[in-house]
Image: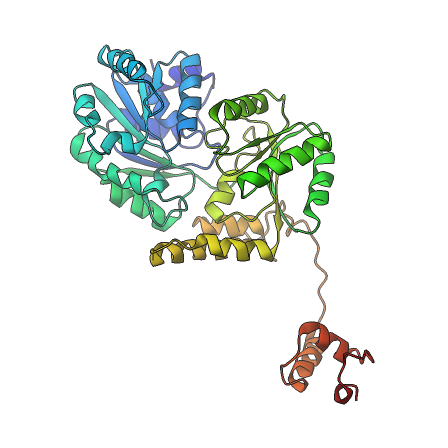
Length: 445
């Protein structure tokens, strides 16, 4: 079977997107690959398709249990035998899984990195007795401390190449700047890897940032204009997702909350309802959306400031996977930035804190832009882009300009005459010649 025939038979697509075909060909030729593909670009296909065509077992390393379960379920539905191994399984379930692996009845096995190289782990010696033909590392940016989602357990994956020297490794991520990309390649010890970087531009998404004032009213207005559309609203804290979902229900919207603290049953139920369109709005923390395959999400709203551009870009990228026009709205308040500065500091790790604070500053800069937002996002990921995209709020707004030299001189002169000792409201009253009693006598002259 050719890759294209397998694509049609198992996934129902008639052609490849982005650089999928070249990536798959490299893996089939037993070469290491690093693929950078924006959210919704079809990353999983790059290892799932070779897994079907290669005769043996593909190991997939992934950081999230919920994500593994989703992928395994959808692969099994497509007739591709897949399974995952995690700590929630009973010894009996694990014994049956081992049996199926020994009998070559599984094509893809999903694991968390700590299952592979954790303490007293006998998993690697067992896997070496099987016919392992491909290793896929999903969310590969987690291995880099320059990345936005560094996970120390990913560092263990440096041992992979020693344990499986002849097995092709494919590392995949949706968001990594130049530094992070370099770090991934070094830490994984890939052998002469082919590197594929797809364009970061999601042309069908319109980016908007609005000052956050009476934000619940702003949100309701936005949602009422899109009554039949599906969307995701991101909040920072678990509590605020539940509160906001409840408030939206009171306003008559079909909304549910999703965060890592809910029990698995509730999470699965809410996610399922969203995928089936029974629920139109999911109010979530960033725990939601990894690997969510819903093509008709029309908008993503951030009611709180995201911690970094990578996370923001990945979350907005969950809108419009079907290629149709979609919106990303961010409600920005400088106060949110102050709160996040506190969270960005990592106890006892100065360097990591510095990286996180710099990333937060880049996010704040994005919110305060008076130039094209899309160009800023593309440049952040080292991709050139013209200065007017025609589909972000800045490019869609006509700004009136005037010469403010004289006004600025007067304002600064007033500050100087007041010996730089008064707040902004006092300076304004002073400039306007106010006779207010709070104005000192000598300043009324």
